[in-house]
Length: 396
Image (tube, rainbow, N blue to C red):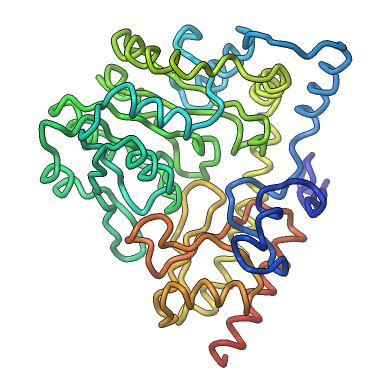
């Protein structure tokens, strides 16, 4: 390819006739199949060939039974984390999990009891607060501050809401949906508060590989003193479009935390997952460096197209500047529509299926989340549909 690139993200395989969640649930969620789905956080980009070929090779063996996660898979992840995030972990501290949400639920069970408080920093990925409620714990909302189109932690608000029953903080880093890569100084403020109040931190870092230059992800547990109170969730699902393999990992370095967590872990009997997932997981971490770098170039180009459109119609819609993820957070408050009307605008006028901002918490009112993790062809369709809708609706 041109510019020395190896991988081609201009097109992708059709998912229309597959069981892809974002396509299968269109009628249920949007009332019509006539929308381009850009909501659920997986990509309409082909999973890399080196992952698929490793799975195909494994299928040459005719038995697919119970298997342990091979040590080599977690060694590949360990090496990746050191190579990309300059953070050293031991293989013995890494555990299998089918998903980050499953890990969140285990952490709530392990480190809190009914009635305890769990800090959630909204707007945020909905399972954060849903999981707390489902365990009969108390959601302690510590909303992010939104000023001049940028989100930051509200440390004073956090300090004012913590009491002796606040046991756990759910950190989203990088943040979904606002796209922030938290700076070391910001993370240190969270750490100081949690250490002072003897709180455990569950750090969801599933998007940590999708960070755009010049920004840099800092694993929360890498901060001085943080590993004693931190459970880290990572994996390849977002980075390599492999969510369907159902495999992520949990990293726990402190012995006491590990023992408490494993009591809950053993109760649910996760087992060790699917042998094909083990192979795919290891392959992505061993061979994915170049593919991921080129993917990020492609995603940034998609983002630039969306950014240019929003700037053209900035009187009505603004794009919160993102530093990570492939999830655009659109500030649509200037359109003067209620949340229901806003959702209908995207469905009926733009024929696009987005996440309503309100689903991420009350602080998401007036916003919509758009997944730009798509091929170039599909991104051009998204831009055309949204521009046409803005022109028609707003009389531009």
